[in-house]
Image (tube, rainbow, N blue to C red; front, side):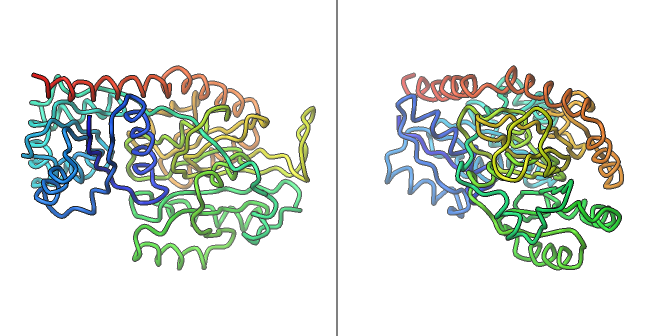
Length: 394
């Protein structure tokens, strides 16, 4: 079947990486999947022209408003996947809410990443009850094995020779919804008390105006660095040297990056990251290391795990919002914070309590292995798209 897949494809963002992964699932089932950026089309008429030119038979959209609204009225069956901001933000705007309701009327199915997202959607659009399925994101990771962590620290103007160096990384697209500045002031105060702690913000410049604000704030914040965007493999390599992840977003559908943090890297997949890491430059007793450093710590992220040769324990600290609390259970699979001050308290606690750290990592890894199987995700999307194919035969 010739299938159109619409998504927002800004480089290195969660939606773009999720879309690439799902396209792979569909093409593995024998479908021809044409993945296009929803922002390349101004109206459904542009989509109509594409459907005719490419002889497309069905469609899929990631994000109910940005992608789904473009698929209406073309006479081909389609499904939609909730992205997060469509439910958490767009649904609060009357006109967008009405548009999304009509999209769900026409869609053959809809996919939510969590039960909470499904419940929210059914409350907003009761007529969609019965066609919304829950499928958590499937997770795997692959780092750049040639990435040099010490060089990265040097280029970031961080003294990696300091004893007990703590580096906290926030890796995310520079846009308000990811709120990378949320913890900057509190962290900068901590750095002034303890000069061996640093925050690094890494990510693409998605929103130009907001990026200027981030650069200005970071320039004036002691102990905080802004690093240009990196490819996913390098991001994963950075995270392999980290101790903990912290997600400070205002809104998340489901942070696949948080899920990746729980894993040992013996599988293959990439995801957008928001990471905090504590890096300890001393060898951990009883464990070997290459080069000058062995790493542990606490921080903020949604990222990925190190190569299979490394077994880095990566706990998660996440802002207490629905998308994160659906993944992180406080003091079981991670730590949830509601204010910057609470984050600092929890980060310090995690640094000083290796037993808590180990428990969180162990529970988190088991949670992901149980509920976020890459193979289950593949089977689900292949089955759902099979419904579209079957409808063509009716």
